[in-house]
View: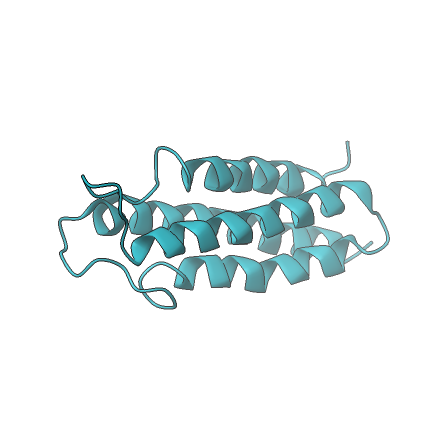
Length: 128
């Protein structure tokens, strides 16, 4: 495997964790009566952004000539994922809620890792 595909594999794994985690173990809480707050929509938005990152990682694995452009297009997707919880989509006001204590920091870390993989992939594939 070429060295420019390794960041795509890592980015694919990280974005897969984002997709699964945003709906399961990193998801915002559901209230006792079955309702949910605004942070629910942050989780749904992160699901969509994670799917977009997954698709871009798969494209980076499949294409050769446009790999640099695919990696570059993944950068703003990851920035959007970093900014979504708490900045673009409001979270609960209490700092002890699950969305602020678990989801927001985990998504910032995971999307930062995906962005780092995309940046490394872009640097490695720039000379192709």
